[in-house]
Amino acid sequence: MSDATRLDSNAWSPFAPAVMQDPAAGHQALLQQCPVHHCADFDPPFYTLSRYADVEAALRDVATFSSEFGQGPRFTDPQGMLCDAPQHTFMRKLTQPAFTPGAMRAVAPQIEVLANELIDRIIDGPETFDFHDDFAFPLPVVIIAGLLGVPTADLDQFKAWSDIQVAAMGAEDPAQYAKEQAAFFAYMQNHLSTRRAQMQSGADVPDDLLSLIAGAAYDDGALIDNADALSLLMQLLVGGNETTTSLITNLVWRLLESPAQYAQLVQEPELISAAIEESLRFDPPVLGLYRNTTRAVTLHEVTIPAQTKVWINYAAANRDASAFPNPDLFDLQRYQHHKPKRHMSFGLGVHFCLGAPMARLEAEIALNALVKRLPDLRLMGEGERIAPFFLWGRRTLPVARK
Image (cartoon, rainbow, N blue to C red; front, side):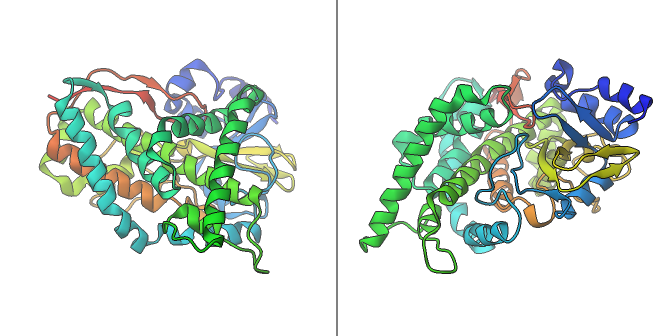
């Protein structure tokens, strides 16, 4: 590594307070000065790729940038979809039916009913409220919990466990969450075993994600083992609520920062899909995920050793001016009148986010309901961000309904 690159590396860290407060504050420094960054502030140390072309190439080169040992910052055993082919291909095929266009059409009425019920409560409640707690959090968590067969009475605990799963991935000391994680795994194991017993007895069971996974079998006819089944359930749980909550919260936050843009959507709801795509580009709920090098790779005169964690920084790639003109501008027209390069917020290639259709559907239904029924929504403060360094969203977002 050259002296200049080392100097630039020391000038940025994903854990620096300013970067934690606003990750975009460091993107241009990465993109222009240090496209391959080495971070020694984590165990294990990792490299970061930020430029659009490098991120795109790495996501497509699964032979070199592998998911076999997880997509988090630590090395983990291959499980569920967090692995390479052929296991990844098999596991993804098992769960794909839950996210087809037909499946989305089937769940859309349920999302619409829930969105309007939540708005009913907001209208009947105090003028000022927390948008995260009262709308953006309950909408996706109720939907994914329903698909996983979780009783309504367990929703608060379910959400708390989901947050712990995410926190543990990026924590300096993940052992602090071991007790809660063990309780969560025991709960989900009992949930899975109960559904399997019902299915084997011939009882009628819901046609949901839990039944799909509980009845999934390997090519030899044997049910998939508990480790794989539980890993799938956990991945679907976290992907199905935490990230969509942040998508909805980030989107409304940016729109209300510039009230004219929210007012424009009230008048022109046909812009909603474009607004969602621009929000995903500008404020990706997942700032980036990790890959594991299978060989030494040299990029921009920096050599990344084999068996090294590499953070594929979606958020920085989304602010690369070579791919997106005026990248630091939140532009409602960007995806409306022309087709820019695809944003990286759902990944790319064989590991493209399975739940992307659900996230987009929930955000579209949510925003349509909000602009129709709460046209005078106002921002009352920026709130505070969620904790994990590789995720981006608002843990609180104070707003007023008029």
